[in-house]
Length: 197
Image (cartoon, rainbow, N blue to C red):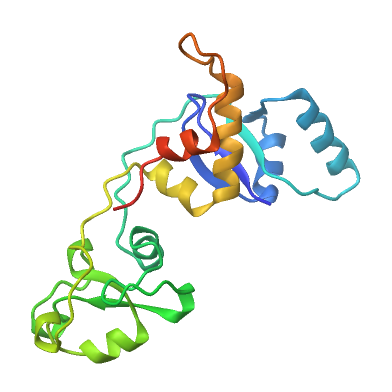
């Protein structure tokens, strides 16, 4: 299972391997949030094995991260379009989907922009081929737009198990606001996260 690395300010920075975690621990650059987790991690290291479960650690010093531009690569396009063909609406596994250029590159379309790339099933991509969608009577479900969310949101969407651990940590660290002291339901937590659209 992965390790979620947080900045000292609690901002998600990256998902790292447990091997990298060991390096950061030996250099004394990270800290655990819970003494129990720290103790179990030390016991696992002594036995030279690492258990299951998500581990959340934070840097001891805040690092300034330049704003990252989210690239329009295959992985991010699949997240933006929710693994759904933008022409026929079929949802499929990533290996069954392709990336289609709305305006073909050979006809002047951009090869790597958010606005000119969509997820398409193999059937629709083959049907469209080197044509504009209107020429082969295909219609986009929605116009392709760039992803404007922060990198941290995309990181947590890529790793749902890490997202759950991060939300649990935030609930335990941050006090609940308002008179109602109930814990947020899973629907409330889901609504709080922006959807890629």
